[in-house]
Image 1 (spheres, rainbow, N blue to C red):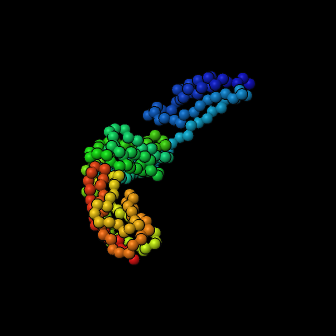
Image 2: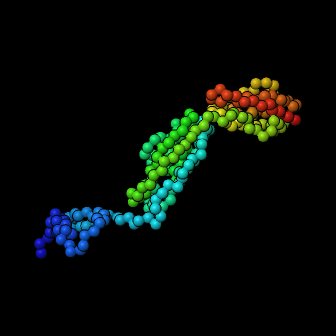
Image 3: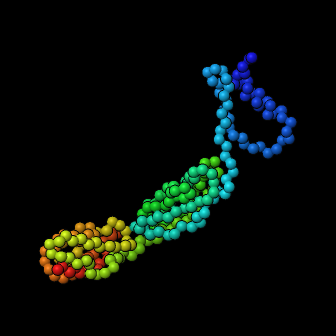
Length: 234
């Protein structure tokens, strides 16, 4: 029996499709198939995987994003529903505020994270696509406000007590402003044996007493905040 070549079989398939008596209708894409001839001369046909319509249409559900502040770390999410297979988010128009970036997060969301560098309002469009090339898009607005006021946030002006001869450590905390922060003792004194490095007071106290001092924090733009503290050493 004579074997058909790949080219002749493909031509016969096309001719059969073109001479079908079935009524014509809207063209519907079919799964792509490939024809190849093996070493034995047989013809092998491999069909591409087909995609079923998603149960829930693909859509971005996030309609607004909360404001951020210059110098304060920002994190929020763009969420989606529906689609088939893995989802991919990408920016197709506009740009994110300076200092922020977008990345896929989990199965049906993308994260926007980073530390904003300037006050601005950014308008951008995000496109979402799934494993079957369904797409959806949404235009979002994200406003970055000026830095929040710099404040020291320790809950009490009295820090943890210390004991002579025992290791000691206590932290100072601040919020707002633009990081990085610089800390300093600007009045009074720490208990002998203790020192301030970064926002941590540490060391081994050597003297009994009550010691009052003023700590000051300065942010990257020169804003300052200060507070008086006391450490009692027994």
